[in-house]
Image 1: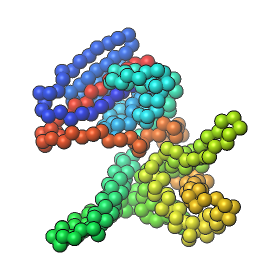
Image 2: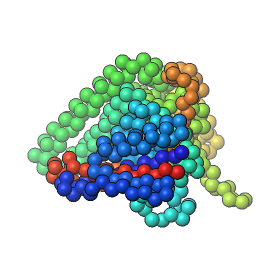
Image 3: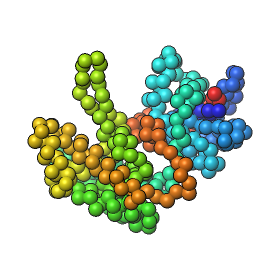
Image 4: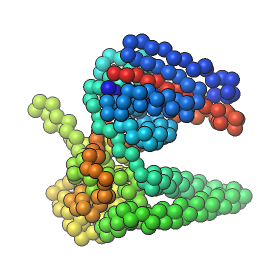
Length: 359
């Protein structure tokens, strides 16, 4: 049995604006809306446990991070749950001729999607892995803000604004340094992460920042084959052929942050790594474009850990954990919901409708 969960967040001004909990049933489809997120999560667990752990699989969409409390709560109960990209579910609905979109319809589509495709369960991340991903994401965000402020400072003419800009840049840089210290400490304290980081930084062209990025965005390191790893990083060339027409291959999808970090590492590796530099020059000598050759170098960087998996594989309690590259559990590529900012009270009061459909 497939149990689909449609969790959606929306900001409201006051608790009085919360709609009353509504319960309705139609056949085997059940839809429930709750005013509070934790009530919705408890209801989802109750329905799943009532159906029985071995016979139920839960499926929900990635919603920019709002699904994480639900996933953590379900993981504590050892319930199988799959996190899928929202765009895949929407495309499935369109293929089925379903153009309307409501919470109830989304829940039904999710249940039908899971029953038809049977995506594999998403393995939960460890506490260290979650903290590393959050720290690395914040460091990357602050680096982008720092670069933007430095560009603005270069165009400012007002003396007062330039002074304020320099002060802001110094504060951002201090925060970045503090986060990098936390990342280094976290990796050093975890034996598995430390071993993986040492193996990654041993590759010429991969520094400490890139290693932390790969560890945060690709926890499956060493447990995939090279083709799966390339697809996960968005480096797999996809065909575009029709009849006698042979279209140009192009990479698509994957985890954008991981691909961006590997690009910078590939630039350094193409110059200073003796093996990858010869590989890059050989492709250029064959007339391959610069970006194509760099993409090939990036793919080599992802294939290296997969060719020596024992150096990167963490010890598992059992060998039943599987990974579905197409239904990756990261939320990359999913847009954050638009926040309608009002008062501080408005931010504290939010609504989380939960739609549940049983297939």
